[in-house]
Length: 80
Image (cartoon, one colour):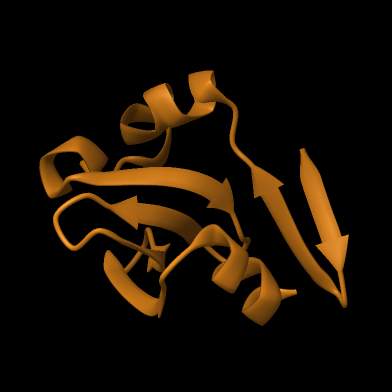
């Protein structure tokens, strides 16, 4: 599913895309205890951090997280 609002593009990942993301994106999501949820473009993904129990953006090139969100609703309100 693609969401477009106020110039932001977000593609919600399917369950199959989530499960294959470590191989497809070359990031050890499971080892880092991260669950990718949406492609936000520019190598940024919305992820859920299992250890910290929050949502945030994660850059797959630099492998850094940023912009913490308490919920997906907070992400959508602030991103779109």
